[in-house]
Image (cartoon, rainbow, N blue to C red; front, top):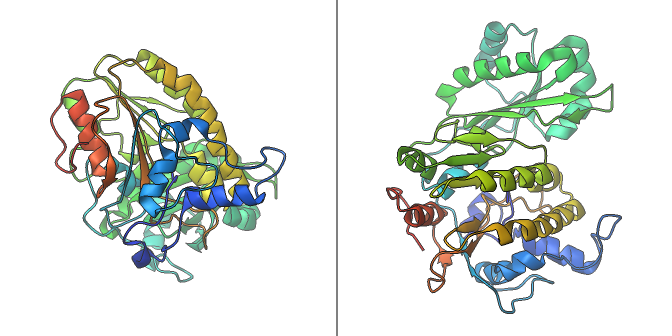
Length: 393
């Protein structure tokens, strides 16, 4: 569940995030009636996640239970995990979940205007044959497209921006600029950015008439590969069936990611997850990312929308849980936080839930000191080569 954090990590103060709590603050806003709208009303309703132990995981992480997340009897095992990796970005969180913490520092761009080095921009324009770029700053993707979209269409200059993450994002209109051309520019940027140690180049295509621009589902991430073998690599090397859902393929630079199933939004991604589960061979691994929590609601600080997305995901679990076989293992977790009540529009340094269905029920998960314990546990369950980091629960 991309960005579904459950309370400040022990080192959150170093990131300016002491007190952040994505699930807790959303649940509190719902209890106050702040999230009542045409989509939902009242307390946060996530009955299936609570049965899996979400309320207890929140209590383990913060010492308190969010409103509506009753801590009565749970059916399976629960825990929480803190992050060892030095960033609070998507690749770091996912790689660590897969058994590979990021122990180096990513490169970042300064909070200046312009923020990109002049020689980088000059080389990008020359090699990608661009008339120039727009933006050149830290920005919210929706805000900067609304602000510069018309000028982009008129001039043919792509909109380039960054965030608190180690990213170089390029937005362009699918019609006037061209989707293939946008991807090509991103590939050029990926190569140019290698010396800067930037984690991802992200293509951010949009469509629509003037002043009515909207992102399309054709986003594409160009990531550097993980620095060590992940659970995906280990499963692939063992000859296991691997299926990845959504942006997992991009996050892992398409290394060990097997069959990739895409979908536009959480519901479509859940459909593909059920489809993948139905075809997954015995001993196989399926790794899914549900992006809407982060990209549509967290970054845009939409508390009510985030709450509704959690409730819709919870309803969809009713389709997944009965399909699990007796020897299957399901882990529901997250990669970082993105508290929609917090300042700014960036990720928040938080602990994540680790909700486990299957495996040895006598072994409690508890509070884990690394996301890598998830990958280590999956490797142990699949009986393949262990990950180099993490301790199996």
